[in-house]
Structure formats: structure tokens, C-alpha cells
Image 1 (cartoon, rainbow, N blue to C red):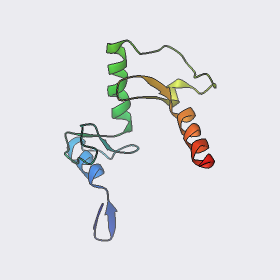
Image 2: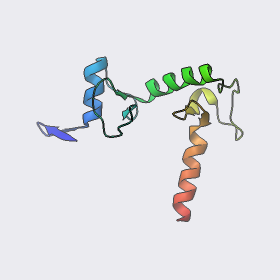
Image 3: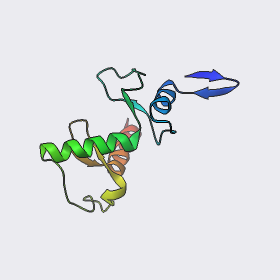
Length: 104
């Protein structure tokens, strides 16, 4: 994180915008093996990560045609992918994390 003329900027978001020419959507994360990497070619925003992981799921055979998860969330809106291409429901995942945090 750094500031310029009183405005805070995240290094990964700046790197993403330099590479793509647009503001990122959602969190920007490094897709390489270095979690703190800020190299423009290594960072991706949420839609980019989902697109790449959906392609990986199709290649490795873990893609699914389900239109909703087991709890009824629409997969077109809530589907996310693990780094290895396995799909999961982002809403259910977030709810489970909140439940775990509340129990701790």
C-alpha cells in the first residue's frame, strides 16, 4: 500500500491497471507461486481468476453444468474455482468461514 497526494493505492491494483488499462473488479491477487508478488504479468482480478480457472476446470474435467449449488445459490453468480479448477459456491464458502470464525 502506498499514498500519492493523499490517496491510498494497493500495489497489486496499480500493477493490474498498468497491464490491462482498466480498474480491477474485486480483489487483485498474484497468480504465481509468490503470494506477495506485484509483477503486472502475475496479478489478476476476480473475474480474470474465475475465467482462467473455469477454463482449467473444462480442461481437467471438473467443470459442471449445475445451475445452482446444494443450498440453492445460482452458480452463474456465486460459482468460484479453486486453483486446481475445482468449482465451489462462493456464498456457501463465505458462510462456512463466518460460522468457523464465530465458533472460535
